Length: 304
Image 1 (tube, rainbow, N blue to C red):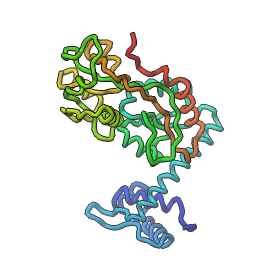
Image 2 (cartoon, rainbow, N blue to C red):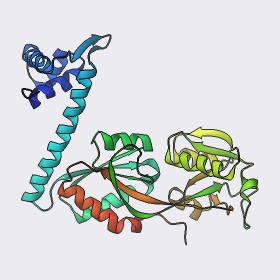
Image 3 (cartoon, rainbow, N blue to C red):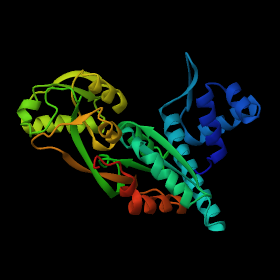
């Protein structure tokens, strides 16, 4: 392995991405034979085949995938190093990318915009996805830090609480349960629920809520976004457990009602999460500190 070069790993990753030597050569502005020669040297150094031909062209073997994953991590570390060096040359330089679970999309852009105003020389990236997608982004180093409700299992991470996160049950204002008065959970459990897909943070809280109460939920629809759930609830297709931070506008406008249910709201926290073993550049550290100190100020509220 001592004879492997980063350039050879670049060639391997580009060939796997393009599906052919010719495609990689075009992307890199080199010749196919030049890339092929370096890949043969790389295979000799590793002692295993790295590419195999399939219906869609060249694809990596297990050994090739391992090297490509290592290449991705090395490139991410070099990018962080480059950001750090530029930040040392200029206190307001660099790049940071935040991964945000979809429930946090209602406040995270405003939070990152505030950070951008405070650090105008920093380029800020934003990636939004469900919980599983953001955890995968953390693991492969394509985001520097993440905003989510619970730290991921199976990854060595650091996390920091920066605000309260509550979950409530919502209904259309025309729903028979909407209005004053506290409702027993058993009564609400008889209703039809609209839920997120398995693996989503809200779905995990929904399943845990019913498991704890010892009731079997009636699920009317499984929907892949909070926006779709809100529209379906407003239309009267069912009720839903949802993050209070996703519904502030609709509640204030009278388009959704929060049910006063025994045992609710569920009280959790918003977390900042980053990989524990990753080199942290000054820009990532600056965003981490900014969100830790001011993140709670940007959370939507049902009050007022």
